[in-house]
Image 1 (cartoon, rainbow, N blue to C red):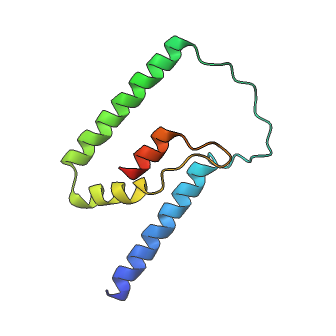
Image 2: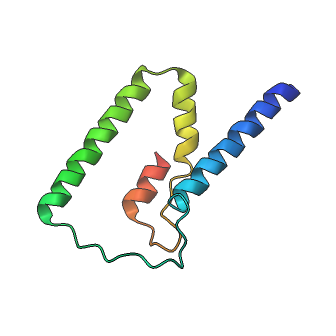
Length: 100
């Protein structure tokens, strides 16, 4: 492996870490901050949310199916980082998604 290739990989890894750290802390939210009370979602809202998530999943699958091999490789690399937010219980579907 050349040093240029190594530098590129190091840069990509740092970029992933930066993106994930912003994702994990919701862009800067701190655990000690008080959050406003949010009303529970109604059944209709949950159904709409589920439909939107399925639509996004289908969109991503389509984009990856038509994308270059490198894009698919990056998506697989990022999938290894799927985890619940800090302090939250691991959900079986999250664990299953991380394994795919």
